[in-house]
Length: 482
Image 1 (tube, rainbow, N blue to C red):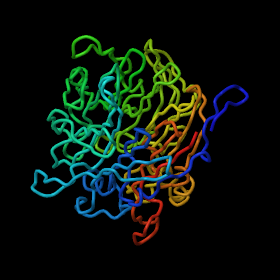
Image 2: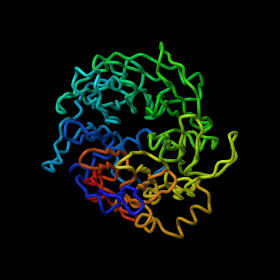
Image 3: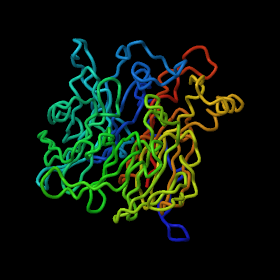
Image 4: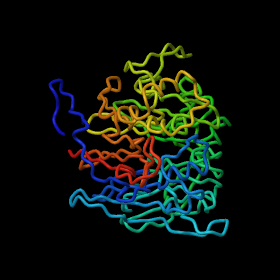
């Protein structure tokens, strides 16, 4: 969609501008998350994570009974090998270009080398080298550790260094970002079923990641043991910004990345922008119109059962180069830097209690787009014995099916100034099983969206007694062409 309106504002996108270009997990409902996405050499690349519900049931205290999909006692009895797909807008065709190999785990049994591909980025070491596609991975606990894969042609993917980045005892690498010609990343998960907390909250830098050479450029947790993970990064102006996961509320730090490592880091946000534990981690960052926008989350979809935090919906703030910040979406409060009111008028989660994450932020054609993770679609499967009586009574009164039909599915909002927000969709683009919008890419052909949808290949309907084929399960990809 091109042009401007009568006020001279570029036209934004609506739900009707998007068309579905991939559904059902690329024909395999076990491809649950479009976990990473980028534009490279005239194609869209998408990395998947498979079998999310079976993996959660085996490792995390989610509290579902029955489970929405079939979950074998051992999730590795199903095919959990992550995949990379690419799309050609010219031919409107998809092609699977990579599937994780099978290796022998530390227990002597065959396992996938990768369960998921959590990050993608195009990086060029110097002007004499062609750009290459880098992919960060999620390793099984009994695997050797996560790898950073590199591809020059989009078909052949090779590890660039040791498992665990530099041999660290971690399971996943999530965030990567370019800044001042260098590549930055950090571990994000640990063995024992925790895909988020790495217990190694250090930022690493590489001038040539293809050689697997990485150097730590921050202290552990920036000197604060409460920083369990560095969760998100973004370059903005003269600084590299990073956001942490902290049980007292996230922190945001920044550095100019100059001088001799470890660099000097400055803390500019603490205690979750003074909301505390309900702003547990920074999940999304994006520069837009002279400020850095920061979206929050509570791990576990908005309910951290292990640490008894939540449920609570997320907030959105923006940080200016001089360090001052605005509350855009959230709850008004007194802070040490003044009283903060949400400038958008929206309470946390855009007034949606079931939004557990503000998952991604992306600028496209003069608008900032923000996506959510909405957990309302699991209400009919959840054990609610320990939930507040008033809440469970309300759910029973309204009805789980009513909520599924009218509430479920991720939200996507857009804004041209960060303060006035317009909903693009509040129903997962018409699919209630699209719990989250995990990836967005602004590209020459238009804006791409990739969903998180673990309700495949079969689903147990609400009030059903058997699993049935679910054509709406598995990740989906949408395109709004320019």
